[in-house]
Image (cartoon, rainbow, N blue to C red; front, side, top):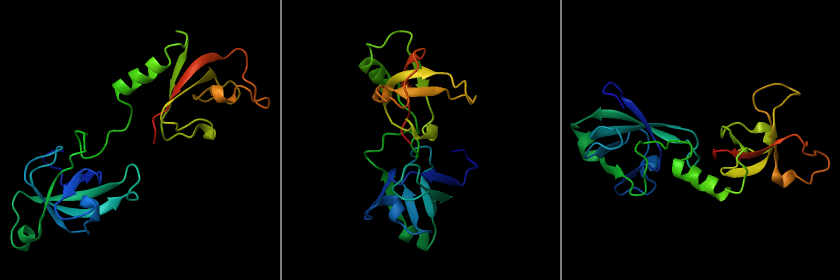
Amino acid sequence: MTAETQYVAVDPRTLSVEGIDGGVDALPNDAVIHLAEPALGMKAGYWCTRWRQGRPGTPGAARILQFAGERASGSRAGDAHAARVCALWAEPYPTAVSGWRLSDLRALIEEHADLPDATLVLIGPSDHPADGRWSPVGSATTGRSAPNTDGGGNYGQFWSDDCADDEADPIPSDTLPALALIPSA
């Protein structure tokens, strides 16, 4: 957050609010919270709750806060709820950074150490359904891959090992071994 920023989006799980079950997401619009010290790139001071982005309880949902100042005057100070970063929040920002951690990737690769060195590693976006065939899985799927020579494009074709016995869609013999890594949405 820069000095000029007046708004910040926070994951509803980020902040706990004293005396309020459900944290910052349970507060109505225009409620005031007080951060006693800077946290997650947010200034210490008073913040007003504003609108919500996304549906509460779904990945990517956020609550918008507006900085109201380091000091509150009048009824704002008396109505402010003390807020702090939840003990279980491990991210360095007020929203989660999507993707895999390198430690998770290393563990997945280690689980598939028996794959040949020529195995192609496919990394797909979590928000691309790939025609509903294999995304998003949130883990690794072994299979076979080949370029998509029929329709062009940059996605190629992937056949999961789970489909190896499918007589209606047999895996061509000239495919490469593949490990598909798809982050969960």
